[in-house]
Length: 97
Image (cartoon, rainbow, N blue to C red):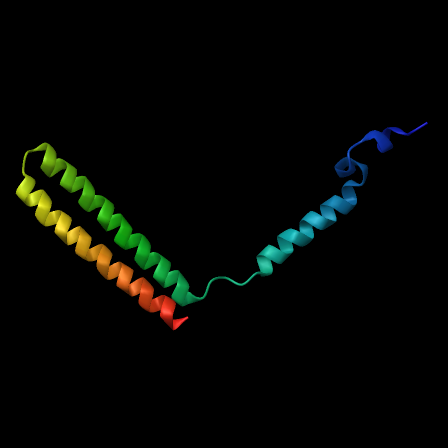
């Protein structure tokens, strides 16, 4: 006849081993290398530029809603230019690595 612990899933059968394995994984994550400062700066740059583009698109929506399509087109051109510059920057960074 099987004992109660034999019927339990493996996770509960030996909780001490599972806990030790989990702690080892957490420790390995804590010891993992952080992204290099250049990668963090690049990610911050991308996030800022994307935030600016989103704000610009919200402004375009407002201009279209107000019937000011001329201003909306001007702003769309500026957003497009900014995204093109960001794309070039990302390509240049990729070529470095």
